[in-house]
Length: 166
Image 1 (spheres, helix red, strand yellow):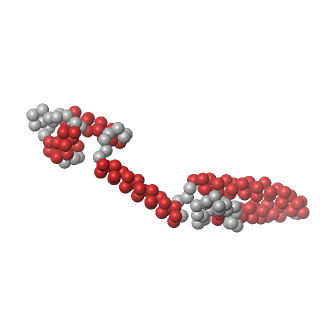
Image 2 (cartoon, rainbow, N blue to C red):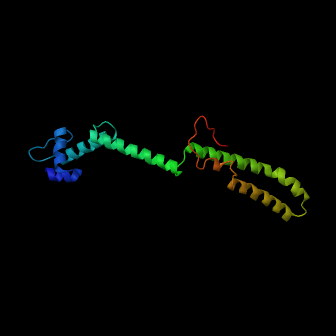
Image 3 (cartoon, one colour):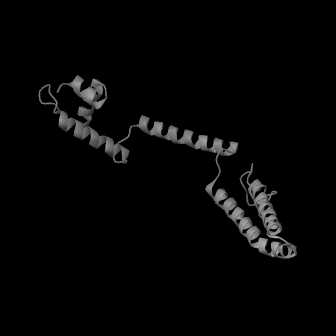
């Protein structure tokens, strides 16, 4: 296989094929012909080595990688400042507080409802009392009154001097 055909298979320029032969990445041609299978195998091995960190990266490759990592980091910081992303620990803590509130509210229902239900004359009245307390508990969870989620909305990074809002 000649250089132009091999370049098409490897998706590189013909000049790059010649450079890779000089660098030892590709086997040298026999006459003007390249062994396509050997070239493709060696090219794939070199790509895998680069991916796994075993290959040699050029200075340009390193700069590109560093610029990409820096840009990604800046995008994440900007998204965090905009409130588009939050730290996992914050979400876990907020969800934990929500569940604590939910558990406490649901466990308090029997104590609140029992005396009221005792005074009811019909099953419909008991049902109404229970529904009222359940809805009150669920409403409290929907609008936490500054106790759970609102502590995290627009929150700046904490320092040692500023305690976390509760």
